[in-house]
Image (cartoon, rainbow, N blue to C red; front, side):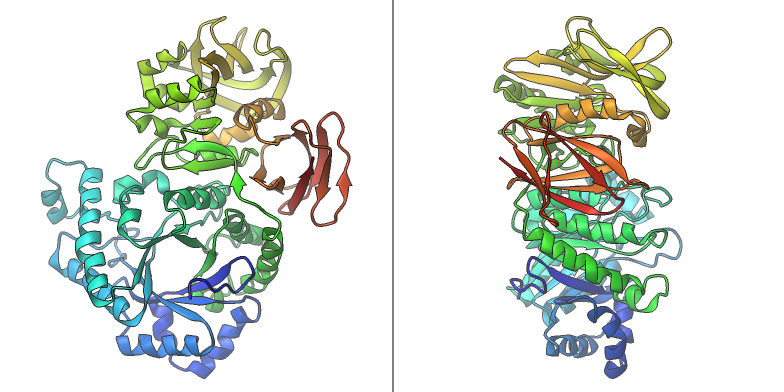
Length: 569
């Protein structure tokens, strides 16, 4: 039933935590309540959970609820959340140093394999226990080394072995959370684990980016979907988001859905059944989903495959957390890669990329083949003296507080202009050698200037260095003139480059379609700089053709409205 879709381009599922499943006892009464969702959303699948935080559902009740949904044409899959009692601090994982919790995992897997032909792990399938037994078992290893080894052991010896012995055809899915920058510290290994299980799933939750514990830019809902599509091609079954911390703005909830689908998710899972049906804070969200899914389905009819600058982030990398998503909120489209993109014409390397011990050789090969390689200041810092192979640029211990900026009109021979940002920005001072590397954008200090974008040739290619503020969100305070330099650098080879303020997302597809989406609080005007040969730009919705003058077109964007454009050659 994995091939069935409740919409033309995707399926919609809803996840039912074990408490919700256990509360479905009067099916006639539940039917009336369930219509709050099904009157608006075409539900094609439900995930029925059997265990979470020491609460269980019996096999008999699972089968009853399973039969209820399947009798209504809704496919069913199982679910497990490997949480222990979380009443003491945060979310507590099961402790696999104890026989009791190993048996809990084995029992939950067995129950799912007996009842369903597939089941999914909610994104608590990580390890964060530091009990005396875990400390003793860890020994001299780091917590990351210990947890990665433990996760491999339990996945092979408990999960997959148990599931396949009971049901050889069962599809075991691991849903990964959105905090990929910390995966290796809690046992997730994106290179090893997806190869051990049958399928994966993607957490695309972004919620409120300012006032929440995770502080995630909204572009992540798209970026992580594309990242995991490339982690397990053909086996990433969908994206999953929730309504929590979105009551401040309903569009922030819907944006998770749009961006998940713009990333070409095959299925979208709504978490959770109980919240959407019973919590007064979220019940109104069901009606809004109806229009969002209808709009997205129509848009997806027109879109090819996503494309963008190849952003290399190896498994278990650390550093400059969410830098791609901050830049994505500045109108830069990325296509993330787990493995180094040897054939890419543009390669983007952030601090985590320097964890690859062969990165210098890989960069050399790309540059000798004529590629553009863009690195961040954090990458330069992490790579250290080895970066000197490419250019004499170093990350100094000094800082600069800048609020006025310049760019260059002659490839770095001179900087010119004085553009004001809307707040002071603290940046690292990148040291470089005059006339050996060229400053394309800078921040003015006192009787001095500090580089924002540096560039020079190496082999047949070019290497560029982007200065990232200490607070990465301060990228939004760079004026449009500086952001435009960064965009032109990273978007080299794409048919279109955005010009304008931060807060505009751009998604590019290989059939000459693009999507613009504004997260600004006000209506704004942006410009698209077009590659040679593009004669017209047409709005896909209205069919209206926009005038192209001097390879540019101007677009007016309203907040939270998706604008789909077709580039005509």
